[in-house]
Length: 484
Image (cartoon, rainbow, N blue to C red; front, side, top):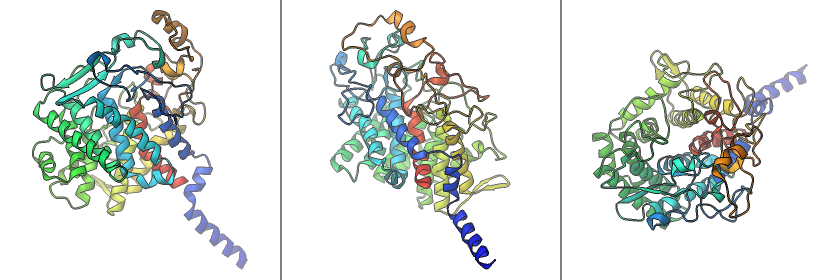
């Protein structure tokens, strides 16, 4: 009996120590695999001349004449989703959020051996942005004619649609795009500071110039409408950019701008169009570190958490019956991954500073916040009423027909002529699996009732976007590190 008691005590200690591992074994997920594949998807979105270490065998060089119509080199960058247009605003947001993940979860990404892949993904974007802002007081913000592009279902390697070039400058302002690109450059400057000092300084110098451009010629740019209209205006991007510049430079001029000139709104989403919550969480980190004048941002970050947390008395957002964040149809998973990212970061900040979240008469621990973040990621990976994964090539019954030209069109011969009118008949409208697996892509996801349609033509369900994945990298890195 004495031996049995000792053995049982040892088992209980072991159980409490390794309960996370048991959960992983008993019906959990391989978060390391999901993290790796989420980064492979970003490689599938690359435009330009692909590197020798390209991990997507069915992708090839594309857009090698981009910028030619404006006599500028705009080769490179990312296609945002399932089409072949390069949009500056979502591309910059993708890079900024990847950089934040690389900074905040550097240790976890090192543990999972994915840090270099994240850095490569960031640099693919920043190399492009350096070209896009190479001319004084000018930023090229789009390559490709979206109307023409949406009339031809073709791989980027074979596209022959017009590669129209759009720009912003003092006469055609676009504060949202200039500020978001500034945020991408300053956040990535932090990422590369210890790796390549000269490159980092170059990025930071451009970030400062772009912020000045956004500030001195304020105005909303509607050239990317109706695909990426900035419904929220430019104040959130200005605040977001100033926050990253202050983090990167520690210069009081950016702190002054944040405390005297920005409007800090209370909102319930974090997305390519709405950055307030991200900036508030970012500035909360500086508040916790003792920086003056930033308490308001921390209070607003608390408000965001309380407005989203399911058991908060102040909850304002809708959840599906399966517990998934649902704000609107069409790439809805971006709101879930965005929420998961902010909740993951904020839970760590509260934990580091031994604080809890207070929502009215309720208190929530950092673990409670992270559990909610984890629930959103787990839902995407397969813990949902449909019992299926929403990441291509991962888990049980993943999507087979993502709305994506490159993956759905078979490899064609170089220079092979394509009939745009018939391209939809040949490849888009066929109800069969894509010939190429778009590994790691998180698709738009289910509707507000947890129902999903795996059809290429049902784009609100099946179209992936770079920023859905970039927002998932941080929480996936933490989960992978915890369960490794």
